Length: 182
Image (cartoon, rainbow, N blue to C red):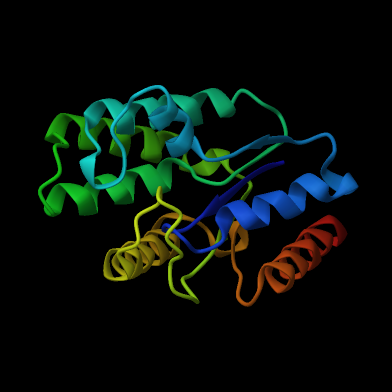
């Protein structure tokens, strides 16, 4: 199964991913986390300073992940697309060609994910000296992301989770259990 945990910055995607890592039921899954931290560690610009090269590097990582049979990732092409669109509108150095490329791959591979887990913002973003802390931007991206899920993904292929990390994880486990029983 291919699972993508999606949502804007500071909403608990990585914390949820850590719950999967600890769960023996997911021992055979490959866990992909923090693509933006990976690309920034090798010198790509990130967050508000992002550019075509950064967005396309994250896109390439996501496309490579699709070669894996069972995986869980804490971002997917959807996140890259919406961040690119919103940041471009705010004046970031993202070209129309880059956006068109990301849209093309979103449309081609959106159905490759078996389950999207959407994490809405439910608390203030914590400043860890890396992630963006702009809660207004976070909320805007979350609104766009939820709308995109409604429009592009069949209802049975996404789950919206609420509450603490533990509560969200229990919701996911229950949902996966119900899918197995179906």
